[in-house]
Length: 173
Image (cartoon, rainbow, N blue to C red; front, top):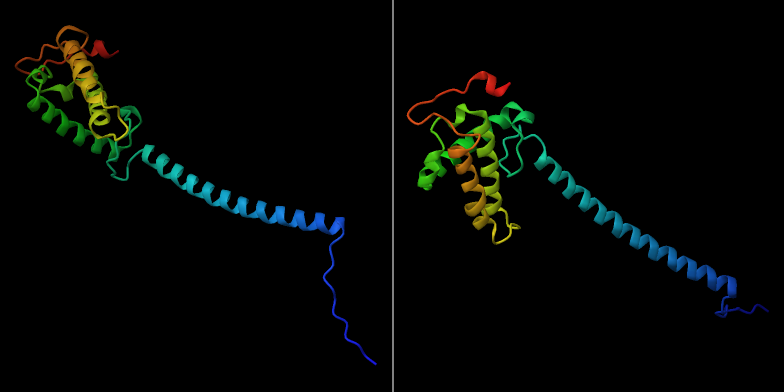
């Protein structure tokens, strides 16, 4: 006579319980690892995007960044020159005191550098969403007057009132 035997659920022995617990821990670690890998991929993608924005911009993008004339490629230099010229023209028309910046500013490398720095500070103050609320006031109180003072009384003082007067080449040696 054949009797069917139905297995009875048994309570696992201590080793079986430990194996089940380890299996659950491994599953949780796998889920945590997958989530971490996904987050890391997102962070890496953000980092690559930020690094590309900081790189030489021969791509024609106009993202605000620090500029170093010495290190620019030709397309980035052309882009910067166009933007800086537009901004300097706007600045000279907007602020009567900015007329101290001579019309021939572009012929003086030191003034080009100063205006580049002033423009970047202006961009930070007016376009950076993370700029402190006082950034625009600082620009008006510190950065613009500082440049204007150096143009009138300091090392940037020029003799270009009516027409361009080149500095002697020895000034740049």
